[in-house]
Length: 233
Image (cartoon, rainbow, N blue to C red; front, top):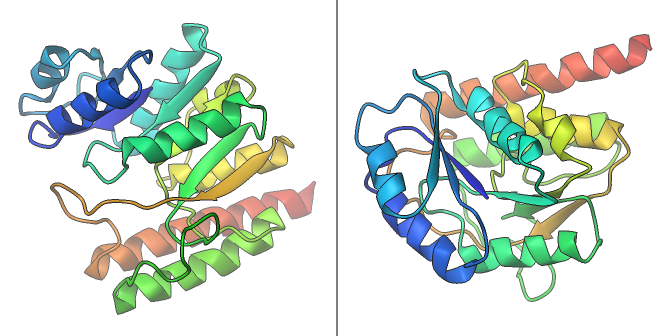
């Protein structure tokens, strides 16, 4: 189980304590992306191992580093949550159970799909986020050949088949989207699972205001490049 983190000393303790309570058998890793606060110290105090990147290298590097650590240490299953407290542990437990039962190779928690007691439209994003989500959904459907509603979700459970794919360096600033493309092209079984997510404990959403436009353009550019590469093959 790993958590990419940058300057998350305030939210990280509760995240780690919840993980230890809900998944007491799991080994916890915090990928410290060059934090300038006490993220690393707090992580160790709360029972996690720390992989330090030395300097701030960005989320794509941090995500690949977490999966690479799991691969190199021989784990059969690996989960990922964000450090801001948005991902409830019971939801991660559900995803891991699905993967462990061989229901799929990769399970991604989604705020925007319904089913199994999760009502449709249970989230009410702002106008900019609604627009961005709609664009991403259309682009994802064209590239993956299937609908995918929550392409930027950071809540993952994967098995050993997926680890080599996800441990490779990401080439874009849209690592979650790039991960989905890799998984789909490799023919692995990918499931988008309805979950509830909490409000972030701190920080600012990357899909807000001008940032939302930048993220959407980055993701769509990644998808367009992927489609172009596929067309040339």
